[in-house]
Amino acid sequence: MTKLWGGRFQKTAEQWVDEFGASISFDQKLVLEDLQGSMAHVKMLSACKILPAQDAELILSGLQTLQQKAQNGELEYSVSNEDIHLNLEKLLIDEIGPVGGKLHTGRSRNDQVATDMHLYLKNRVTEIIELIEGFQSAIVEQAETHVETVVPGYTHLQRAQPISFGHHLMTYFWMLQRDKERMQESLKRIDVSPLGAGAMSGTSFPIDRELSAELLGFSGVYQNSLDAVSDRDFILEFLSNSSMLMMHLSRFAEEIILWSSEEFRFIELDDTFSTGSSIMPQKKNPDMAELVRGKTGRVYGNLFGLLTTLKGLPLAYNKDMQEDKEGMFDTVHTLMGSLPIFEGMIRTMNVNTASMEKAVNSDFSNATELADYLAAKGMPFREAHDVTGKLVFTCIQRGYYLKDLPLEDLQAASPLIEEDIYETLLPQTAVKRRNSLGGTGFDQVHHQLGLAKKLIG
Image (tube, rainbow, N blue to C red; front, side, top):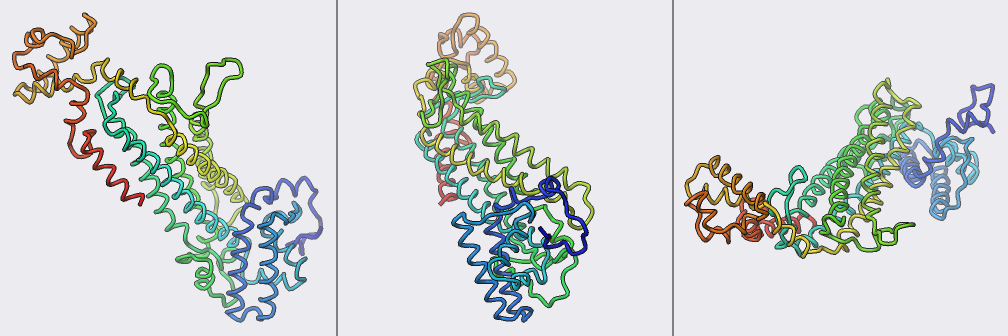
């Protein structure tokens, strides 16, 4: 088969060489974006009198036919035509005749593919933002239910201080809010049209790039033709933002996995988001959370893969840049699968408040309350810390917790301690008192929830 670009070539490549160089196996995902770009391009060519109106109408009609076939899954692609652009051009010529060859006037596959990817990411990032908000909504729903559910807070995976479980959950809301804002901010760089930059230097035809950008819904155009065809920063930015988002999901997944273990028993995942064992009948495994945690690595790999591909490329376009698509598609697929899975897990998980209450009453996470109590009565905090530490050691030796020590033992450590210490040491009291802005106090968690609801509408 003669290549659409094959005029100066005397030999044709063997099939295995064609297959190695072709991208149609994966860039066919851009079919609708490619057709959208071509429709805008031909309308612009007609408006600028570069193409006769009759030719433009025929080409547009052919593109609309291909669009309908693409939506119905009726298009057949050929490796010999390499990529989505040449496949569609060949299909267009087959559909309407030689006039289809005029479509490529004033453009190159270099600006064409860049336009396709800008359109693709603009649509997908918008969808991902909506999925993030759905996940945030699920977090708010659970957090609001458990504002006054007290759970041990951890540092170094050791019991630290009692906190509101709603406060803990809301931590992930704010992580996701930053992820969402990064995605929204990235749209400024995605929402730019490279169409009309040609292969690298623009075109001699009197095209109107602003018109084609407007027809495609872009807010602006690249101001430098070399930059337009060589820029993949917008994909790198998406992959970087996606890596941070997946890192946050992975951290949450790790906590879900811990909380659902027999050692914690803080939550139970719905059967829908769990699996069993082929040999151990009692098992209920948090496989969906583990998969999200695992898929984080592939998203990181996609980012570093493209960074490495681009790092040594001279301007402008190079065939290496064909490697920009599979990682982008894979990351989109991973995010659009992981976010709904996580939303479902959080919405449907059962919170075991009894286990949380038992845990928070069976540790020394209230030790800081005793130190603060003494400091509030005038004892230097360092001295209060030392007194409390010694009392904790006494409790460990006797098999007690601080709330179990007789008042005379507490007063032997410091005469500043009075009967009200037992109320102070209650986990609920400890949490309620931490009412500084952004703290775990119940009033502050309700304040957070109010802010969150405004952010997700």
